[in-house]
Structures are given as C-alpha cells and as structure tokens.
Image (cartoon, rainbow, N blue to C red; front, side, top):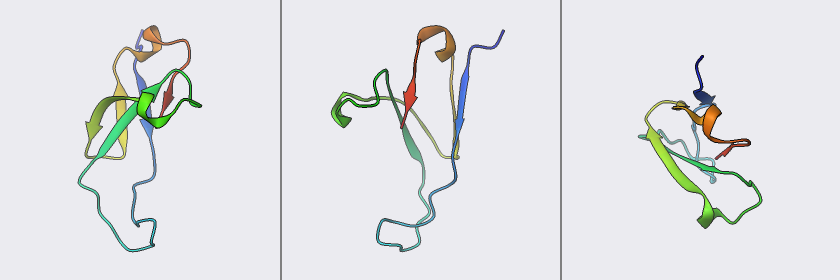
Length: 67
C-alpha cells in the first residue's frame, strides 16, 4: 500500500502586482492546524515543478494541511 500524499497546483505565472513571473521553485509547508500562525508551519520540501510528493504522510498524520 502506498502511503504517500501527492499534492499538485497550477503553476504561478504572475506576481501579486499582476506582472509575469516564472518561479525557479516552490517551498512546501505543512501543519496539523491550518488556523495556526504562518511561523508555526514546517517546511517539508522544495520542488521545481507544480507538484510534490510527501512520502509516508498518510501513515504519519491524521489530518494534514499543505500550503
């Protein structure tokens, strides 16, 4: 049984100012409670694509939020 969690998203193409951007990568964060302050989120990895596999996450967490 595969216990990995795969997350994917649309690639970022513009900044908050609506100017074009091509990011070199994404930092992936997780937390058990999405309402917690951003400084309590943990970096779980980096990826240059618009998807990330969190190996074994399905056996580690009851609930899991990724940002």
